[in-house]
Image (cartoon, rainbow, N blue to C red; front, side, top):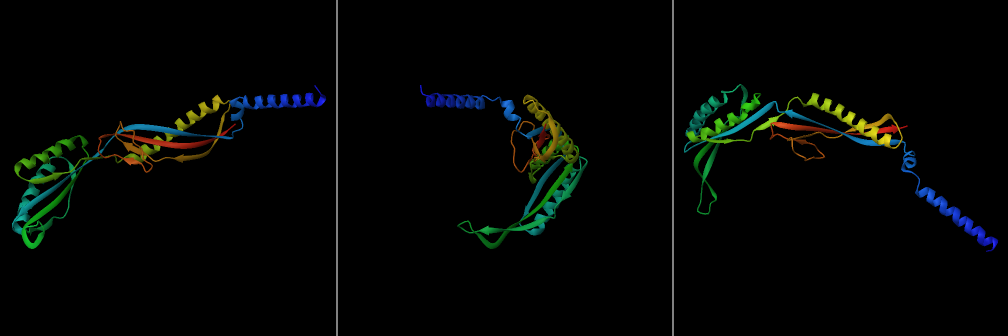
Length: 238
C-alpha cells in the first residue's frame, strides 16, 4: 500500500473512532450541558361543599289577572312554609304577570287574551348542606297538593376556596421540588435557585372526574369535590 493509501486509512480510522465516541457519549455528559430544569408540580385535596343553593319557580294561572295573582299569593304562603322549615336565607324575585293569548286554527297567537300566568322565583342559600335534598323533596311534594312548581337542580358551592388554594399551591410547589430533585439526581446534578414559577388554573371537579379545562372547571353538582392545582417551575442546575 502506498504512503498516500496508508495515510487515508489512518484518517478514516480516526474519523470512525471520533464518531463512535460522540454517539456513545453517556447521557449524563449530555445532561451536563443543561443549565436549567423545568418540571410540573401537582396537588389535590378532597373538600366538602359548605353552601347549598335550592331554587324553585312557582307558577299560578287564572282567567283574570286578579285570579292568577290571588292563586300565586296562596302558593307563596305554602312554599314559604316549606322553606322556613330550615334555617336559610330566602330570596324572592318580583312577581311577574303575563297574558296568555288565544291561538288561531293554525296554532298562531292572536291578539285576544285567553288567561294570565303569574310567576315568582325563590332561591334559598342553605348552610346546612345535608338538608338540601330533603328540602328539595319537600318542595316536590307540593306538586301533589296541586301547586305548579319547577324545582331546579341543587347547586353545591365552596365559599372558603381562597385559603385552600394558597395551601394547595404550596403543596404543588413541594411536589415540583421533589420531582426536580429526583430528575437532577439521576443526571448527577443538583438544584439551584428557582428561575421562574407559573401557576396553572384550578380545577374544582367531582372526586372521580379526570376532566380538565384550560379555563378551569367549577363543579356545582357534587357535595364532595376535588380541588386540583398545578405549577410549572424552572430550576437552575448546578
